[in-house]
Structure formats: C-alpha cells, structure tokens
Amino acid sequence: MTTMETDYFDTFCKISKAFGSAATQNELLNLIVDSAISTMDGKAACLFLSDEKNDFFIPVVQKGLSENYFHASPIKVVNLIKEIEKKGYLLFKDATTDARLEHHEAKKAEGIASIMSVPVRMKNHTIGILSLYTATQRDFGEKEISFLCALADQGGIAIHNNRLLNRIEKNSTLFLDLASSINSTLEITEILKHMTEELCDVFGMKGASIRLFNEDTQAMELVASHGLTQEFLKSLAPNVSSDFISSILKGETKIVNDTDIDKRPELVEGMKKAGIKSAICTPIMAREQAIGLMGLFSEDQREFPNDLIMIVEALGHQGGLAIQNASMYLKLQEDKNNLEKDVWSHRSWF
Image 1 (tube, rainbow, N blue to C red):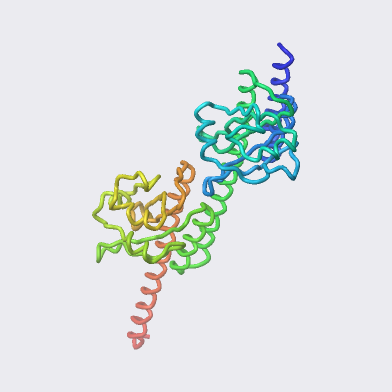
Image 2: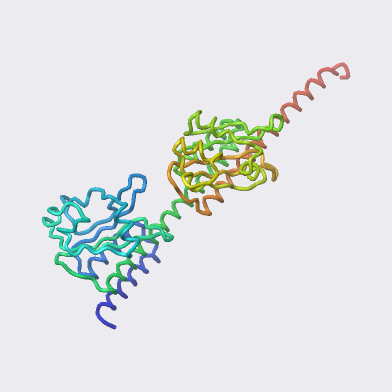
C-alpha cells in the first residue's frame, strides 16, 4: 500500500470512529475539512452549504482562510452547481485569473493558487460544496479527486443524519404538544388554531389550513388557518366533487411537489398566485372516517420525506380525535341538561 493510500485509509478510520462516537455535526464537518487539508497537503479548505432560497453558498466550516478573505461572503450558486454536477468536480488551476471566479486580487493576497471543488450530496441532491485551496498551482490525480469526493460524501451523511435527528425531535415534540393541548382543553377552535401555528413553525411552512366537511351543505368549511391570506383561502375553497378532494375524503394523503410543473391548473392556479410552490394535504380522521382535511403550504419547492408524511398523517388523526372528544363532551353536556330539566319537571314525584 502506498503512503497516499495509507493516509486515505487512516483518514477514513478517524472519520468512521467519529461517526461511531456520536460526534456532533459541527465536529464531524470540522474533521472532514481538517482531513482534506492534512491528507491532501492543502493550504486551506472550506465546506459550503447552499441557501436555495437566496441562491447562495454559505461557508459553514473553514480552516486556513483569514477573516479578511472575501470567501467569508456568500457566493452565487447556479452556474457552479450546473458545472460541478456535470463533471463531478471543478478545478481552478489558476484561481487568481480564472474567469469563473471572483475576487482575484483577494486570492493573490491570501496566497491561494489553485482550488479544487467537489459536490456535497444528500440523497443524490447537491446541498453544498467542499473546496480545497493550495498555495502552489497543481493538478489533481484521479485518486485525489475521488478521495476529496468521498470526504464530501461523508459531510453529506453527517448533515443528513443531523437533519434527520432534528426532524425526529421536532416531530416528537410537536406530537406531544398537540396531545397535551387535547388533554388540557375541549375548545376545539383553540386546539386547531394552535395546531396550524405549530405545524408551520416546526416544518417551515408558509401556511396551514384545516377544513371540515359539512354534511348538510356538502362543503369543506374553513375552521382554522395560519399564515395564509383570506384571498388565497377563498381561491382555494375545495370542490368536494373533484378527484383531489374526494381522494382525501377517502383517506388518502395528496402531495403537490411543484406548482410550476403540476398539470392540474384547477388545483394549483390559486397556489401559484399566492407564491406557493409545494403542498401536502392529509385527511382529518375520526373513527376511521375522513371528516375534513389539513393542508400545509410551502413557498419553496420541496420534497416531502416519508417520516414527515407519516407525522402529518398522524397529526390528522390527532386532530380528528380532538374534534371527536369535544363533540362527545358537548353531547354529554346536552344530555345532562336534558336530564336535569326532565328531573325538575317531575319534582312532584319526590
């Protein structure tokens, strides 16, 4: 085994040990950046994560770069992402003159000669970039590029695991909070209002709404909402006879991943006008029957992972339980009042 291969092996042993010791995301990312510098004889390294909403890359971990270096500022994402995904990596052999880069004078002042950048991926989606900086101009061999890509993959795994753990924690807290609300009050409007607010906060949604099916009017009536305009809510008043709504009332969860490409104009037209990119709608269930629907709306195009779908569906059942409990309480109160009136009317018996 060559010295280079031994270094690569030792590096991955350290990273594997760090994963196994439940190191934090920040600790793992720092280890990855440090490993890139030490193993590949670099001057500096930086791991960027994309801020898709603002179309920027933001440095989250960097070593070897001065505070005055312009890389501390966000850099544009679009062109770099396209090029890096096409080739699998980007080499800027002369970073001080390459037209694809900015701030050439700052790079000269920093002593940067070459930059090698590889994608940080999570589930085949590029979420960032790992860049290695060298003090002298150099080319990179196939093994070196593969090694840096493997380090970036480890960064993607660390970020994915951290996000998953955070999501599980948030989901559990949300579920517990809602269960506590159901046990603490029978004011159904208060519970549903709290539910929409919490959903938006935990899942980072633009807005949420809850509608219940009125059997007398055969309409879906709005009972709670958060973060959505009245104009949007009116434009989205669901048609019970539509395939989309009828499927939900049969117990199915329906998803709109991207309103720009969705081929159901009657469904997404109002969403697009309100700046909605994605949505998830799930039934409100009571005794295995759909009595309404809950909609979550995002202004960003996003996928909905299975664990998020499951927790949203479970919350739909919890909402149905809250409504059912409140209805039973009101019925008991009505029966109690009727009984008291009946007893009083026959007081002469006693």
